[in-house]
Image (tube, rainbow, N blue to C red; front, side, top):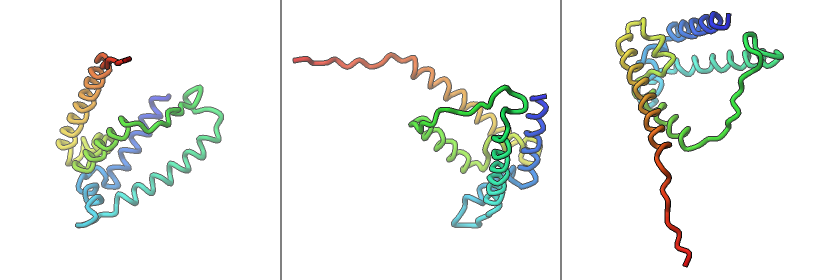
Length: 151
């Protein structure tokens, strides 16, 4: 049942992105173009999402446990480290240049922008794999030992 609920939620999210026009990169880039032909549609979509999420959180936290799990899974790490800031910066720049982020890209696969979305998804997967491999290499590298002069 958990998988069916997740599928329905994902389908609803995708349909919302498609109906709001957020699967069209031109709408997203138009929102970011504040000095040119600015398109405020994304702002309205974001505001609607914040309202729906706020109401949803209020309702969910009144429950003693989630519907399909024993306990709530709440992130405990609240540290803003260098990796998070650099990674989110790269994500934001890529999102702004292309006009797609992962959710709209997946929803775009079956629209008129399907080929562009597939190219974006391939690049996104490649970036994830590259990051994983680079992180593994960096973490396996022996620490640099600096000699200490005790004189």
